[in-house]
Each structure stands twice: as C-alpha cells, then as structure tokens.
Image (cartoon, rainbow, N blue to C red; front, side, top):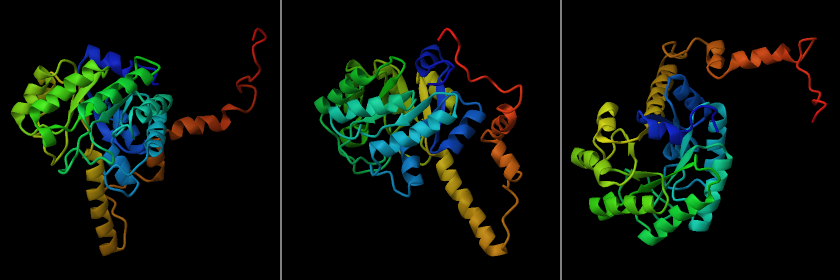
Length: 297
C-alpha cells in the first residue's frame, strides 16, 4: 500500500477524493503527477487496452495483474474495478485476496450477472439481492485489513428503477460494504438525492456522454459524495488524439511535432528516469551501500 494517508482516512477526513481513470502504468503516473490524491483503474479502459469491449471478457487474473502493476508505480491509493467479482461468493473471496495482495486500496463489485456490460450500456441483467449481498459479505470477510475498502456497485437503476437501486445500496452497506456506488443515475435530481437516501458514503461516477448528467466536481462534493471517479476521460481522449496524429502522419509523411512532448528524454523523465540514472553508479565504489547483515540479526 502507499506510504501516505490510506484511502479510508482520506474519505473520512475529506475533502472528496477525486480519482481520474487510468488503464496502464503510464496513465496512472500521469494522474499522480497532475496532483490527484488517488488513481482509478478503469475496467473499461483496461479491457479496451487489451483490444476488447467492456463486456466482462477479461479474467480476474488479467485485471489483478494490471492493477498490481499500476499500484506499484504510484504513491497514491489505487481504486480498481473488480467487475462482478468473477463468480459467486467463493470467487469474490479470492478476488479480494488477490487485489489486496497486489497493493490495491479498494475495489468495487457490482450486481450484474456475469459476463457483465458497461454500466452506461443498455441490456444489463441483475443477480438477485441475496446473491449480491452474499458477495458483499464474502468480500468484507476476505480482506485482511480494514484499510482495504469494499465498494458496492449496483446497476439496478436501468433495470429495476431508482428505488430498487437505493434498496440495494443500503443492503450492501448493511452487509459490510464501505461505500455505495449507484451506477448511472439518469437525472440531476437523482444525482443530488442519492447521498441523502443512501445510509453511508457514496461514490459518483463521472462518465462523458454517459447516462448520468454531468456537474462540476465541487457541486458533487456539496451534494455529499465522498469519492468521485472519472473513468473514460484519458482513454477516449487518447483514442481521438491518436486518430488525429496518425491521419497527419499518413497525409504528410512526417510525425506531427505538436504533441511531441520534447523527445525521448522528456518522455522517460515522466516515468522515473532520474531515479534509474542515479542507480547506475550507486552500487560501485566506496560510497556503495553495505549489504552485510547487522551482527545482531
């Protein structure tokens, strides 16, 4: 886990934690370097980076591997999508163990059938409430540290309506979840009402061109949300930028200089080149650190 304040402390103390979405180590480091207090590993972005749509096609092992690599490269907490927990409560139990072992600070588990669909697509199906709460109980029991947070996501709004989604949020909190994630509210009034109707801290999911109306993060915080994620901003923007750059290269025969970033040296500097340069000579000569064990050991 990161050495700084843990996510639980940050959420309890305030202000609202904002975690932009990243899908690999580079984008995770860019989020941290921009000054955000946490990083969100987007499941949609991870799936797209594997060349697949967000249809529940990645395994738990693939998701944990990506999350572990990202968590190891940043010094702020990483929140990760864990889809449906990849099976029943036994699968969820192992899912929690693997994500926690990988250094992740929190995961969210949803109440869709598996394979799931992106929360802002139509055609979703739900598991029963008892199946959902059993998964949340298993998740809460599996963690080794109370600092590892279980976020209960419900996709019930688009399938069974607002009231059922609120019922599921509260049932999940009663079952041991730390935060509730009401996915895809459909009006500004619903967005504002959720923190009042849910009996615990809430996560807000800011999705560009999704089903939920957007509002400034300051307004979201005033409504009572404690954690906000912005999953798709970098992923969708990078796709658009790449299309533009590739079209110009194809047209002119030269790589566009507009977004060059200063060349290889400047690029490597963004991912810790200075630290690795220092290590080139750190282990030679009289100043090299001793590797002998202390005599008292």
